[in-house]
Image (cartoon, rainbow, N blue to C red):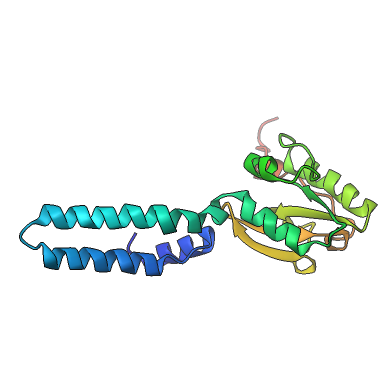
Amino acid sequence: LGTPRFAERIALEQGVRPWYWFGAVGLIGAAAMLLWHRRAHLAWGALMVALWTGYGLFGYPAMNDARSGRGLLARAESAMPADATLALANVPEQMLLQAPETAFAFGFKRPAHEQLTAAFDWLRAASTHWLLTHGEPLDACLDGDRGIDLGWSNRRHWYLLQAHAIVTDCVPIDRRQTLDPAPDETDD
């Protein structure tokens, strides 16, 4: 909790930098200890009121975009042309619930490689088609440099892509199969 790596991870994954808020709560706590040094329970109460009021008014709303798909979907819609159609592949269920009514999805319960295969066909069908997906499948079949980097949300790095971002002749693989151990050659 007290290491810089923790703070860096929060800033990266949650998209917030709460240093002003932490500093303000610390100053209020220090001031309360100075004012009520003989009445520690009052200082503790003032610190807790500052902490939870600050979190409710500033901390939680600042993290909402990073923990909800709304901010990400708003960034995606503002980055696309007005006549564009959005599709979502390999996304969390909450993102499907927050997506615009006109957005396409390729089956929430389908494996990611099947969703991406269907998404590639859909992307190639029209130049107005855009795909929102996160960075995990980009290593082989999608070139994130050819798309729009939308940043971090839901602890994932998101990209908005068109058909030209698909790597030629690439077929999405079932990552679950690559994680299975190799069969033992001695078992015959």
